[in-house]
Image (cartoon, rainbow, N blue to C red; front, side, top):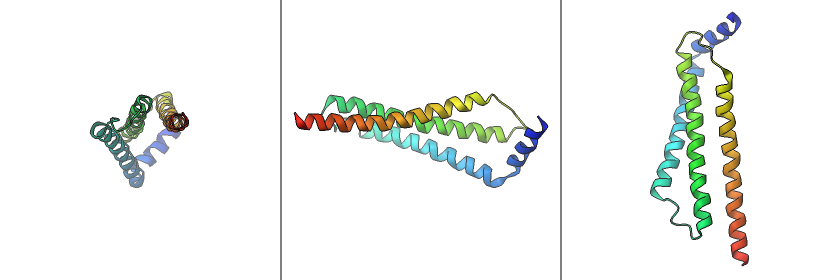
Length: 124
């Protein structure tokens, strides 16, 4: 336990690490806000087919989920660095990271689905 606290105290004293975590958190939240703003302003009404609208709506939702998940992760780490050797269950971080990675994979598959749907509709 004390070995962990020594590493943790070193990270607390490292200004560059603190700034890096803070900037990453802000950039993640800005990305989520930008995706939400774009979804609100443009929406999916510019798409012709209903299937593409549904897929793009899910794509926007997944982008917002990714930004919020990583933003929450970095904000949690930044607050944790302000406390004295506070330990937590690492499974929380693993679940958030896994959900965000799954969302990244899902967003890529949505784009592939849109491409295939557009290809099939152009053939017929």
